[in-house]
Length: 330
Image (cartoon, rainbow, N blue to C red; front, side, top):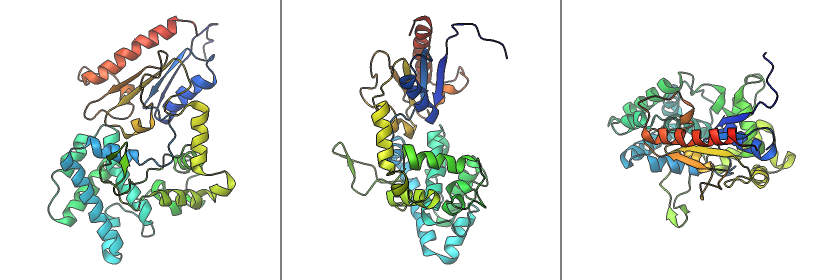
Protein backbone atom coordinates (compact mmCIF):
# COMPACT_ATOMS: atom_id res chain seq x y z
CA UNK A 1 0.00 0.00 0.00
CA UNK A 2 1.46 3.35 -1.01
CA UNK A 3 2.20 5.70 1.86
CA UNK A 4 0.00 8.77 1.76
CA UNK A 5 1.59 12.18 1.86
CA UNK A 6 1.37 14.21 5.04
CA UNK A 7 -1.65 16.49 4.94
CA UNK A 8 -3.68 14.22 2.64
CA UNK A 9 -7.29 15.36 2.72
CA UNK A 10 -10.12 12.92 3.31
CA UNK A 11 -13.69 13.26 2.04
CA UNK A 12 -16.47 10.93 3.24
CA UNK A 13 -19.03 9.47 0.84
CA UNK A 14 -22.08 7.52 1.97
CA UNK A 15 -25.47 6.50 0.65
CA UNK A 16 -28.62 5.45 2.55
CA UNK A 17 -27.67 4.26 6.07
CA UNK A 18 -23.99 5.04 5.33
CA UNK A 19 -25.28 8.38 4.03
CA UNK A 20 -26.50 9.12 7.53
CA UNK A 21 -23.19 7.84 8.90
CA UNK A 22 -21.21 10.18 6.63
CA UNK A 23 -23.12 13.14 8.11
CA UNK A 24 -22.83 11.87 11.69
CA UNK A 25 -19.11 11.27 11.19
CA UNK A 26 -18.71 14.95 10.34
CA UNK A 27 -20.59 15.85 13.53
CA UNK A 28 -18.57 13.49 15.72
CA UNK A 29 -15.12 13.93 14.13
CA UNK A 30 -15.10 17.21 12.18
CA UNK A 31 -11.29 17.32 12.15
CA UNK A 32 -10.93 13.97 10.34
CA UNK A 33 -12.43 14.94 6.98
CA UNK A 34 -12.87 18.12 4.96
CA UNK A 35 -16.48 17.30 4.07
CA UNK A 36 -18.93 14.58 3.12
CA UNK A 37 -21.66 13.62 0.70
CA UNK A 38 -24.81 12.20 2.30
CA UNK A 39 -26.70 10.63 -0.60
CA UNK A 40 -30.23 9.60 0.39
CA UNK A 41 -28.91 9.84 3.94
CA UNK A 42 -31.48 8.74 6.53
CA UNK A 43 -30.35 11.19 9.20
CA UNK A 44 -33.74 11.34 10.93
CA UNK A 45 -34.38 8.15 12.91
CA UNK A 46 -38.15 7.55 12.89
CA UNK A 47 -39.89 5.02 15.13
CA UNK A 48 -43.21 4.70 13.24
CA UNK A 49 -42.13 5.21 9.64
CA UNK A 50 -45.54 5.21 7.97
CA UNK A 51 -44.14 7.92 5.67
CA UNK A 52 -42.42 5.23 3.61
CA UNK A 53 -45.74 3.86 2.35
CA UNK A 54 -47.36 7.28 2.01
CA UNK A 55 -44.51 8.64 -0.08
CA UNK A 56 -44.74 5.74 -2.53
CA UNK A 57 -48.49 6.29 -2.85
CA UNK A 58 -47.96 9.99 -3.62
CA UNK A 59 -45.38 9.50 -6.38
CA UNK A 60 -47.42 6.80 -8.14
CA UNK A 61 -50.21 7.72 -10.50
CA UNK A 62 -53.66 7.14 -8.95
CA UNK A 63 -54.23 4.20 -11.30
CA UNK A 64 -50.92 2.62 -10.35
CA UNK A 65 -51.61 3.07 -6.63
CA UNK A 66 -55.05 1.51 -6.98
CA UNK A 67 -53.44 -1.42 -8.78
CA UNK A 68 -51.10 -1.92 -5.82
CA UNK A 69 -54.01 -1.80 -3.39
CA UNK A 70 -55.96 -4.32 -5.46
CA UNK A 71 -52.99 -6.72 -5.41
CA UNK A 72 -52.62 -6.35 -1.64
CA UNK A 73 -56.34 -7.03 -1.14
CA UNK A 74 -56.27 -10.09 -3.40
CA UNK A 75 -53.43 -11.61 -1.43
CA UNK A 76 -55.12 -10.72 1.85
CA UNK A 77 -58.26 -12.53 0.75
CA UNK A 78 -56.24 -15.60 -0.22
CA UNK A 79 -53.94 -15.74 2.81
CA UNK A 80 -56.66 -15.12 5.36
CA UNK A 81 -58.91 -17.74 3.74
CA UNK A 82 -56.31 -20.29 4.90
CA UNK A 83 -56.18 -23.80 3.50
CA UNK A 84 -55.70 -24.29 -0.23
CA UNK A 85 -56.03 -20.61 -1.13
CA UNK A 86 -53.33 -19.57 1.35
CA UNK A 87 -50.94 -22.23 0.12
CA UNK A 88 -51.60 -21.33 -3.52
CA UNK A 89 -50.75 -17.68 -2.82
CA UNK A 90 -47.56 -18.54 -0.94
CA UNK A 91 -46.40 -20.94 -3.63
CA UNK A 92 -46.24 -18.01 -6.06
CA UNK A 93 -43.31 -16.73 -3.98
CA UNK A 94 -42.00 -20.14 -2.86
CA UNK A 95 -42.79 -18.96 0.67
CA UNK A 96 -42.91 -21.47 3.50
CA UNK A 97 -46.19 -22.67 4.98
CA UNK A 98 -45.26 -21.30 8.40
CA UNK A 99 -44.46 -17.77 7.16
CA UNK A 100 -46.57 -15.57 9.43
CA UNK A 101 -49.06 -13.13 7.94
CA UNK A 102 -47.15 -9.96 8.80
CA UNK A 103 -43.95 -11.37 7.27
CA UNK A 104 -45.72 -12.31 4.04
CA UNK A 105 -47.28 -8.90 3.61
CA UNK A 106 -44.07 -7.08 4.51
CA UNK A 107 -42.36 -9.10 1.78
CA UNK A 108 -45.15 -8.33 -0.69
CA UNK A 109 -45.04 -4.59 0.09
CA UNK A 110 -41.26 -4.48 -0.22
CA UNK A 111 -41.35 -6.42 -3.47
CA UNK A 112 -43.42 -3.69 -5.09
CA UNK A 113 -42.27 -0.59 -3.23
CA UNK A 114 -38.54 -1.22 -3.51
CA UNK A 115 -38.96 -1.04 -7.26
CA UNK A 116 -40.09 2.56 -6.84
CA UNK A 117 -37.33 3.19 -4.29
CA UNK A 118 -34.63 2.08 -6.70
CA UNK A 119 -35.85 3.89 -9.80
CA UNK A 120 -38.18 1.24 -11.24
CA UNK A 121 -41.52 2.98 -10.78
CA UNK A 122 -42.29 2.94 -14.51
CA UNK A 123 -41.69 -0.83 -14.76
CA UNK A 124 -43.87 -1.53 -11.72
CA UNK A 125 -46.68 0.75 -12.83
CA UNK A 126 -46.63 -0.74 -16.32
CA UNK A 127 -47.79 -3.99 -14.68
CA UNK A 128 -50.07 -2.50 -12.01
CA UNK A 129 -52.00 -0.32 -14.45
CA UNK A 130 -52.66 -3.23 -16.81
CA UNK A 131 -53.49 -6.09 -14.45
CA UNK A 132 -55.55 -9.01 -15.75
CA UNK A 133 -59.20 -8.89 -14.73
CA UNK A 134 -58.99 -12.43 -13.41
CA UNK A 135 -57.87 -12.28 -9.78
CA UNK A 136 -55.60 -15.33 -9.91
CA UNK A 137 -53.91 -14.08 -13.06
CA UNK A 138 -53.39 -10.64 -11.49
CA UNK A 139 -51.68 -12.21 -8.46
CA UNK A 140 -49.53 -14.38 -10.71
CA UNK A 141 -48.50 -11.37 -12.82
CA UNK A 142 -47.28 -9.38 -9.81
CA UNK A 143 -45.54 -12.37 -8.24
CA UNK A 144 -43.74 -12.99 -11.53
CA UNK A 145 -42.67 -9.34 -11.70
CA UNK A 146 -41.37 -9.31 -8.12
CA UNK A 147 -39.43 -12.57 -8.38
CA UNK A 148 -38.02 -11.48 -11.73
CA UNK A 149 -36.84 -8.23 -10.16
CA UNK A 150 -35.49 -9.53 -6.85
CA UNK A 151 -34.79 -13.21 -7.46
CA UNK A 152 -36.68 -16.46 -7.29
CA UNK A 153 -35.84 -16.87 -3.58
CA UNK A 154 -37.24 -13.46 -2.61
CA UNK A 155 -40.21 -14.93 -0.73
CA UNK A 156 -38.38 -17.95 0.66
CA UNK A 157 -35.19 -16.40 2.04
CA UNK A 158 -34.65 -15.76 5.73
CA UNK A 159 -34.81 -11.96 5.43
CA UNK A 160 -38.58 -11.61 5.87
CA UNK A 161 -39.13 -14.75 7.95
CA UNK A 162 -39.40 -14.08 11.70
CA UNK A 163 -39.25 -17.79 12.51
CA UNK A 164 -36.06 -18.20 10.48
CA UNK A 165 -34.48 -15.07 11.96
CA UNK A 166 -35.21 -16.43 15.44
CA UNK A 167 -33.67 -19.87 14.81
CA UNK A 168 -29.85 -20.22 15.01
CA UNK A 169 -30.07 -23.44 13.02
CA UNK A 170 -31.65 -21.61 10.07
CA UNK A 171 -30.20 -18.11 9.76
CA UNK A 172 -26.71 -17.45 8.41
CA UNK A 173 -24.34 -16.21 11.10
CA UNK A 174 -22.73 -12.99 9.90
CA UNK A 175 -25.39 -12.36 7.26
CA UNK A 176 -27.20 -9.06 6.92
CA UNK A 177 -30.67 -10.49 7.60
CA UNK A 178 -30.38 -10.21 11.38
CA UNK A 179 -27.79 -7.42 11.59
CA UNK A 180 -30.05 -5.00 9.68
CA UNK A 181 -32.92 -5.77 12.02
CA UNK A 182 -30.65 -5.42 15.05
CA UNK A 183 -29.87 -1.91 13.87
CA UNK A 184 -33.57 -1.18 13.43
CA UNK A 185 -34.76 -2.80 16.66
CA UNK A 186 -32.06 -1.50 18.99
CA UNK A 187 -31.02 1.82 17.45
CA UNK A 188 -32.68 3.51 14.47
CA UNK A 189 -36.17 1.97 14.10
CA UNK A 190 -37.61 3.04 10.69
CA UNK A 191 -40.40 0.53 11.37
CA UNK A 192 -42.39 0.66 8.13
CA UNK A 193 -45.95 0.38 9.41
CA UNK A 194 -49.04 0.93 7.30
CA UNK A 195 -50.64 4.38 7.71
CA UNK A 196 -53.85 4.17 9.70
CA UNK A 197 -57.28 4.70 8.11
CA UNK A 198 -58.13 8.40 8.17
CA UNK A 199 -54.64 9.38 9.34
CA UNK A 200 -53.65 13.01 8.70
CA UNK A 201 -50.34 14.83 8.35
CA UNK A 202 -50.20 18.60 8.82
CA UNK A 203 -53.99 18.69 8.63
CA UNK A 204 -54.16 16.82 5.32
CA UNK A 205 -55.32 13.21 4.87
CA UNK A 206 -52.68 10.63 3.98
CA UNK A 207 -53.20 8.46 0.91
CA UNK A 208 -54.85 5.12 1.74
CA UNK A 209 -52.23 2.53 2.59
CA UNK A 210 -50.66 0.45 -0.17
CA UNK A 211 -49.48 -2.26 2.21
CA UNK A 212 -51.65 -4.52 4.30
CA UNK A 213 -52.81 -3.25 7.69
CA UNK A 214 -51.28 -6.47 9.02
CA UNK A 215 -47.92 -4.74 8.58
CA UNK A 216 -48.52 -2.51 11.57
CA UNK A 217 -46.48 -1.20 14.47
CA UNK A 218 -47.49 -4.04 16.76
CA UNK A 219 -46.24 -6.56 14.19
CA UNK A 220 -42.92 -4.72 13.76
CA UNK A 221 -42.19 -4.44 17.49
CA UNK A 222 -43.29 -8.03 18.13
CA UNK A 223 -40.88 -9.17 15.42
CA UNK A 224 -38.03 -7.40 17.21
CA UNK A 225 -38.99 -9.07 20.49
CA UNK A 226 -39.28 -12.51 18.92
CA UNK A 227 -35.91 -12.30 17.17
CA UNK A 228 -33.82 -10.64 19.88
CA UNK A 229 -35.76 -11.03 23.11
CA UNK A 230 -37.77 -8.42 24.99
CA UNK A 231 -35.95 -5.25 23.98
CA UNK A 232 -38.22 -3.11 26.15
CA UNK A 233 -36.62 -4.74 29.19
CA UNK A 234 -33.10 -5.34 27.92
CA UNK A 235 -32.25 -2.14 26.08
CA UNK A 236 -35.09 0.36 26.41
CA UNK A 237 -37.79 0.89 23.84
CA UNK A 238 -37.05 1.16 20.14
CA UNK A 239 -38.65 4.61 20.14
CA UNK A 240 -36.32 5.82 22.89
CA UNK A 241 -33.28 4.51 21.01
CA UNK A 242 -34.27 6.46 17.90
CA UNK A 243 -34.89 9.57 20.00
CA UNK A 244 -31.42 9.32 21.54
CA UNK A 245 -29.78 9.17 18.11
CA UNK A 246 -31.73 12.24 16.97
CA UNK A 247 -30.89 14.15 20.15
CA UNK A 248 -27.21 13.43 19.63
CA UNK A 249 -26.93 14.22 15.92
CA UNK A 250 -29.86 16.55 15.21
CA UNK A 251 -32.32 14.31 13.38
CA UNK A 252 -33.94 16.21 10.46
CA UNK A 253 -31.67 19.24 11.09
CA UNK A 254 -28.24 17.63 11.53
CA UNK A 255 -25.61 19.10 13.85
CA UNK A 256 -22.78 18.96 11.34
CA UNK A 257 -20.86 21.11 8.88
CA UNK A 258 -19.59 20.66 5.34
CA UNK A 259 -22.14 18.02 4.44
CA UNK A 260 -23.92 17.95 1.08
CA UNK A 261 -27.30 16.20 1.18
CA UNK A 262 -28.69 14.75 -2.05
CA UNK A 263 -32.12 13.17 -2.44
CA UNK A 264 -34.32 11.84 -5.22
CA UNK A 265 -38.02 12.38 -5.78
CA UNK A 266 -39.29 8.80 -6.00
CA UNK A 267 -37.24 7.57 -3.05
CA UNK A 268 -39.38 7.03 0.08
CA UNK A 269 -36.30 7.32 2.29
CA UNK A 270 -36.16 11.06 1.66
CA UNK A 271 -38.95 11.21 4.28
CA UNK A 272 -36.23 10.27 6.80
CA UNK A 273 -33.72 12.77 5.47
CA UNK A 274 -33.21 16.48 6.06
CA UNK A 275 -36.52 18.31 6.51
CA UNK A 276 -37.26 21.99 5.74
CA UNK A 277 -35.42 24.22 5.70
CA UNK A 278 -33.63 21.84 3.33
CA UNK A 279 -30.42 23.86 3.19
CA UNK A 280 -29.74 23.53 6.92
CA UNK A 281 -27.18 26.33 6.71
CA UNK A 282 -24.47 27.56 4.35
CA UNK A 283 -22.28 24.62 5.31
CA UNK A 284 -25.01 21.99 4.86
CA UNK A 285 -26.55 22.40 1.41
CA UNK A 286 -29.33 20.17 0.08
CA UNK A 287 -30.38 19.30 -3.46
CA UNK A 288 -33.16 17.00 -4.73
CA UNK A 289 -33.66 15.51 -8.19
CA UNK A 290 -37.45 15.55 -8.43
CA UNK A 291 -38.09 13.37 -11.46
CA UNK A 292 -39.80 10.11 -12.41
CA UNK A 293 -37.67 7.02 -11.77
CA UNK A 294 -35.17 9.05 -9.76
CA UNK A 295 -34.47 6.68 -6.91
CA UNK A 296 -32.26 5.87 -3.94
CA UNK A 297 -28.62 7.08 -4.13
CA UNK A 298 -29.00 7.74 -7.84
CA UNK A 299 -26.04 10.12 -7.94
CA UNK A 300 -23.68 7.23 -7.10
CA UNK A 301 -24.21 5.70 -10.54
CA UNK A 302 -21.82 6.33 -13.43
CA UNK A 303 -22.84 9.59 -15.13
CA UNK A 304 -24.48 9.15 -18.53
CA UNK A 305 -25.45 11.66 -21.23
CA UNK A 306 -29.00 10.33 -20.93
CA UNK A 307 -29.27 11.15 -17.21
CA UNK A 308 -32.25 13.36 -16.29
CA UNK A 309 -31.36 17.07 -16.09
CA UNK A 310 -32.47 17.08 -12.45
CA UNK A 311 -29.81 14.47 -11.62
CA UNK A 312 -27.17 16.40 -13.55
CA UNK A 313 -28.04 19.49 -11.50
CA UNK A 314 -27.54 17.57 -8.22
CA UNK A 315 -24.10 16.37 -9.31
CA UNK A 316 -23.10 19.77 -10.64
CA UNK A 317 -23.99 21.56 -7.41
CA UNK A 318 -22.21 18.93 -5.33
CA UNK A 319 -19.04 19.31 -7.39
CA UNK A 320 -18.96 23.02 -6.54
CA UNK A 321 -19.01 22.24 -2.82
CA UNK A 322 -16.56 19.36 -3.19
CA UNK A 323 -13.98 21.62 -4.80
CA UNK A 324 -14.62 24.43 -2.32
CA UNK A 325 -14.26 22.20 0.74
CA UNK A 326 -11.15 20.50 -0.62
CA UNK A 327 -9.57 23.90 -1.28
CA UNK A 328 -10.59 25.50 2.01
CA UNK A 329 -9.11 24.67 5.44
CA UNK A 330 -11.54 23.13 7.90
